[in-house]
Amino acid sequence: MICCAGWLTQMTLDDDQHVIHPARMWLSSEVPLTVHLVTGRNYAVLIDSGVADMYGLIHDLIQTTVSDRHEVKLILNTHAHHDHIGCNARLSGLTGALVGAPAEHRAWHSDLETHYQEFAREHPELIPDTPALRAEVLATIDGPRDVDLPVAEGQVLDLGGGVALEAVSLPGHMPDELGFIERQTRTLILGDALTGVGWSFFHGYSDADVYEATLAKMRAIIQGNHIRLVRPAHYEELSAAEALAVLDRIAAGMAAVDSAIRQAARKQPRFSLRDMWLAVSHQLSKNTDFRGLRVVEAHLLRLQRLGEVRAVSAQEFQWAG
Image (cartoon, rainbow, N blue to C red; front, top):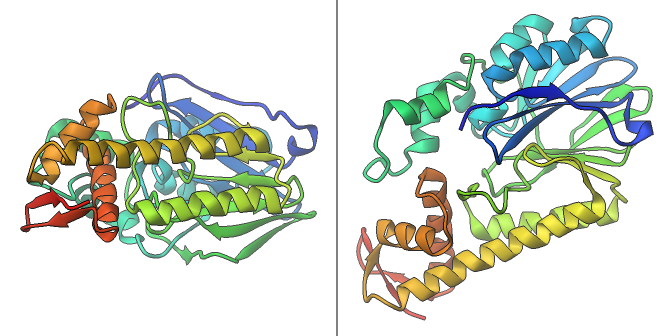
C-alpha cells in the first residue's frame, strides 16, 4: 500500500493559511495520507511525519513555510503506527525537533521489529511473516527514533501569537491515540480517529466499544467547540457537517460488522476466529488482511461481552444469542 505521487496542498479557509499547512500524498489509489505543520509566532509543530517516502514533501513544506527549519521544535505523533512516524528520524535530525507521542506504545518508535510483530502479526498463526508484509510496514519507517516527550489529554502547547494545540485522547483505532484542537482557527487535527469507510479493506480498530465511545466524543468535540474544519490523516479536509456525516458512516460500518458476525454465527454451531474473519470479509467485500482480522476480533469480543457469542475453547466460539 505504498505509494503514489504527492503534492503540497493549499488551505481552504483564509484565516487558516498562516497557521495550518498540510502536505499530502497517496498511499494507494484509495488512501490519502496528510501531515500538518502548525505555525505560531514562537515556533512550529509538525503533527505526524507520514511515511519515509514523504520526506521530500515535508522538507519542502518546512522550507517554504518557516524562515529557519529549526523553528520546528516538536514532531507530535497522533499514534505509533508506521505511516504516522515514518520520517521521525530524518526530520528530527533536520530540524532538531523533539518527538512527542502517547506513551503506551513508545517502544514501537524505537524497536521496529516489535512494532512489526505486534502491529501486523498479533496472530502469527494466521498472518505469515512474509517479505511483502515486512516491506509494507518496515519500509515506510526511516529508522528508529525514541519518544522524547510523552503527551496526554489536556496538555496544551502554546506556539505563540494565539496559536495553541490542545491534546485530546481518542482511543480505539489504537489504545493510545491523540487528536489536537487548534482553537484560534477552530480546527480539529486527527490521525486515524476517523477511520476509512468504503475502502477495499477494514481500516482497523482494537476495541469496538472504546472506538464507539470515541466516535461520540468526537461528535461532542466538534459540536461543543464550534469546530469549523476537521483535518484527518486519511481524508481530505472536512467541514464540521462533513465530519459528522463521516462519523455516521463509520458507526453504520461498525453495525454492519456486528450484523455480519451474527448472521455467520447462526449458520454454524462452532467457529474459529479465522472462520469468522474469512466469512465477514467475504460478506462485506473486504480484503482478508491483518487489519480486518483485528476488527473482526474486536467485534467478537464485544459480542462475547454482550453474551451473544461464547468461547467454548481457546480456539473456538459458538453462537449463544
